[in-house]
Length: 307
Ligand SMILES: NC(=O)c1ccc[n+]([C@@H]2O[C@H](COP(=O)([O-])OP(=O)(O)OC[C@H]3O[C@@H](n4cnc5c(N)ncnc54)[C@H](OP(=O)(O)O)[C@@H]3O)[C@@H](O)[C@H]2O)c1
Image 1 (cartoon, rainbow, N blue to C red):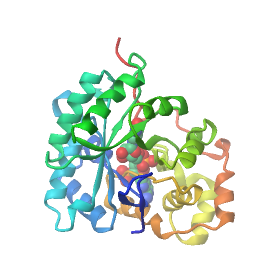
Image 2 (image 1 turned 45 degrees about the vertical axis):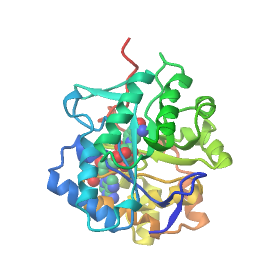
Image 3 (image 1 turned 180 degrees about the vertical axis):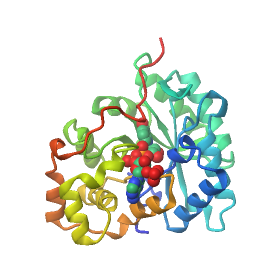
């Protein structure tokens, strides 16, 4: 698969990454999950997104990270090329996510993630999952700074941050990635300045839920323009959507997720699709009114911090 540099670093990564979250949240049988990860690696994908909270609850924290570590150690290819990007700062309690940004907690989870991922190399990319309104960004990022200084973490990223919050984080530590929600239903990064900021500053932008996330993703093919363009090209609407991100901005590295290999491969092969300017314009112009709706979010995002 084609590669690119991760932000302003020397680290090379595939132009499309894989989000491993569903393998743990949907409890895919371990052998099947490892087989999916091996196939993802075999395809040339070298950027894998995870989090210590991709688990059921407090009893099995780091489930997803440990799964990835096992897949890497049993893979016959060159595992040193795979960048595992993990996160800390949101915990999962009884199936709900809560923010937890105290620096002592973040430092402890970085150490635990380092251990879960094998404990030999620094974490290639550690991302602060969600800012915690009770904790100044500067304090949360001090934990990341310390982990970099101690060699536990190579690069730092942030997730669910505004431009002002990104700037505050950068006053403490170098930030190489920003991971915010971005899909046809959520075009916030185009409007809130985050995408333009990342382009300007050579920060890699990782759109999460790129095909809409669980629920909406299953409705994507009901979007008329996408269905027409996909049929004309002979590809699926999901692959077309990922190709749109690649055409949208050179700073974007999409991280589609799927618990099924067939669907994962379909999205990841978007790296082979180059959209025409007309196709990009037509997808750009899809309005929220043309999109299928869901009344409830089957996988709610992180809730406010516990008081
Ligand atoms: N930073 C954050 O706060 C945050 C929040 C959410 C997610 N993330 C990250 O972003 C990654 C991606 O997000 P996501 O998994 O929520 O959303 P997503 O990638 O937009 O959508 C995943 C859904 O799309 C379906 N799908 C994918 N490819 C398909 C295809 N070719 N055909 C049909 N259906 C397809 C999957 O179904 P099947 O599983 O049935 O294939 C799954 O239900 C996650 O894995 C995680 O790493 C980060």
